[in-house]
Length: 432
Image (cartoon, rainbow, N blue to C red; front, side, top):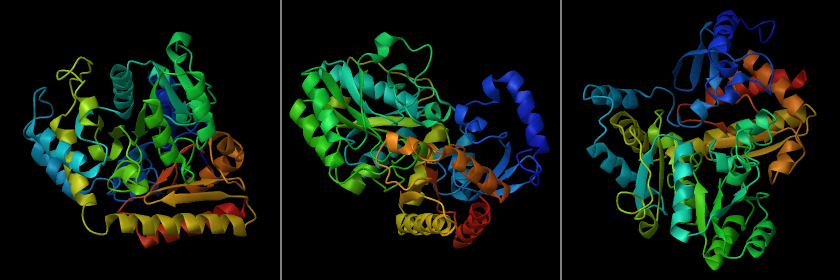
């Protein structure tokens, strides 16, 4: 069992069987609880801000299926729309009018997007956008930031944060050196390092890709002037600026980080929220760049399930819900109360902590901080986080099982949820 008081017998049995069927017993590494100890709980059902495991335990959830459940799990309006769409079929492999609807919503909302292409995951979107960057500029090299995760494609598995950091893997076996030799890295929030990379590789860098707010090294916000500085440098160098908004898109503002900070990149990747809980990804940007994508142009990219009617339906309804008055004010209010309270409880109990939030995205580090980049994040006390995670789980609070992941709230989270969470934190942090 994870603890002496939490009954997880059925979860243990299912996970034991899963380890014989799937590598590590999971379909995605961070779910395996490697960095926090114990065994993962196996979910049975979800609703609103709550999740239930197969043993009948109930938890207040701050993972939200890693971001998509921004309106709450199994929202009745999303489910109703999906049931109606399901009667017409699950996949067409042909043009679908719903694609136009969601595309128009994305284009209207996200400042950089004049045309969009739907895919099936954030990884797929980032793979395609890198190919597009290279095709448009005729250059091969790219700059990414240490601790920023852009999916598990070979060229991005360089100082990639997220599950790679959680498992202690510096990169990954099986990735050819030739593939990553054109991937240059810099510390997040370090404009000088970016300038030096451009100076050392004149005319060779296709562009810069980053999480405008990092969520895969824990929650790290951009320093004042960082995003604007990147915009200026890339323009001066004839390179493209790409915001990976798979996590931040429609979460920290309706138009994403680029709306929040007033910086418009050339290209954007999206996912999570725009699928409303179904598998989805997208990339979009300036019309002249996107016109290079096949069949309009020569850069090839395709996908059998891309733009499937179920993902489009769930995405359309989710964006409709988010577009209603007060949504982001509510997310900011509830998340602000949560993180302010958690930081205060931790400090009152003698723990060194720092953290913050933007709208429905938050994070906490067990270090005095401040945390500006991946190196700062690695200095936080991971063992203390593991104890905190296990303790909160026992108290009925489900947090991401890694110190290197941001947390998420939803429109379904209530004041009572937050109060319950803070009471749980007091129990846990006072005993650590």
